[in-house]
Length: 443
Image (cartoon, rainbow, N blue to C red; front, side):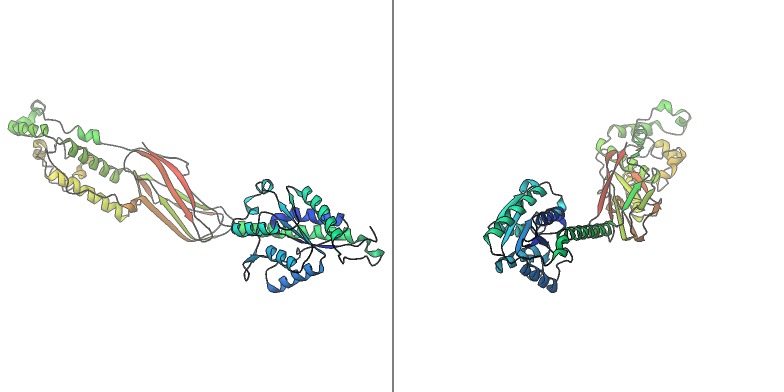
C-alpha cells in the first residue's frame, strides 16, 4: 500500500451524540489506508468557520455522512443544521458521497439527550432526502466500519479521484500519527463536554422538612359530646338546695323547650363550638427547616406551603386567624342570644359575659343545659379564609450548604382527615419549581 493513493474522506455528523460512531469511521478509513477529515478542532458557529468547512469539503475526495438521532445545531440565517448544510454543499459541488444511517432499533436504545426533541420534523425531512444517496444502515460501530470499507471501495472504483500521493518515506507514520492525534483530540473534546455538563449541574438544591418527619400526625380534640350532654332536661330532684330559690315552673318550662330542640341547628352549634375551641386551644407547633444542599447560592427563593382543607397554618399574630376566631365567636353569640334562659345559669348570674368561653377554662360552662329552640337558623355562614391554608416564605439570597429554621408557625386542626401538605420550592436558578408532598393525618 506504500505506493497507493490515499483519499481524503470528510466525515459529517452531529457531534456529541455520535462520538463513538465518528471514531469508528475514522479508524475504518485509516485501516483502509486513507485520510479522515472533520471539524473536531473547532465549532461551526459563524460565517468564517462555515467558509473553512466548505474548503475542507472542497479539498476532500469523498464526503461521508453519519446520520443518527439528532438534527444538530441550527445556522440562524438558513434555519438548517450545519450537518444539513454540509450535505447540501457536498451535493452542490458534485462530491462523491455516501451515507450511513442509524437503524430504528439502535435509535430506540439511545438516551433522551441523543434523540431529537426540538426539530423532529426537520430531521424527518432531512433523513428522507439523504436516503436518495448511497446508503448503508448501522446498529453498532461494527456496522459502520463494514459500511465504510464497502462504500469507499465502490466510490474509488467508480470515480476518478485526485487523492494524495506519499512524497517520501518520512511520511510512513502519517496514518498512525493521525490516529494518535485524532484520539487525543477526541478525549479533549469529551473532557470539554464533561466540563460543560458539570457547570450546568452546579446549581442550588432546595430541601424542606416539617418537624423533621416524613409523616405528620395530629390529634383532633373534640368536645362535642361533653357540650351535648348539657342539652338534657333538668331533674327537679337534682336541684337539692336550689329548690328553695328556683321555681319548679321555670324548670318545667325549660324542660318543655328541650323537647322541641332542632337537631340540625344543635349540630351546627356544636360544630361551631368545636371549631372555636380548636382555634384558641389546639396548636401544633411546627419546625420548618429549609436547606440549600446544592453547590451554588440560590437567589430570590420562594417557598409555598399549602395545607389541605381540614387544617389551618398560621402564626399567633395572623390577622386572618383572629378574624376567623371573632367571626365564629359572633355566630355562636347569635345563637346564644335566642336561647331560653337556663334557670340555674340565670341564678348564678353567668350570662352577663359577652364571650361565653371566658369561663369554660375554669370548669364552669355558661351554656350548661342551654337548649336551642325549634326552627332557629343562622344568619349566613362563616368563611374559612383561604390565606390560612397557605404559607409563603421568601429569601433574597440563600447560601449553599446552609439552612434556615422557621419555628413561629403552627397547625390548627379543623376536622379529622387525611391528605398531603404540598410544598413548592423555587428560586431564580430553577427552570421549574420542585414540588414535594408531605402526608398529614388528623385523627
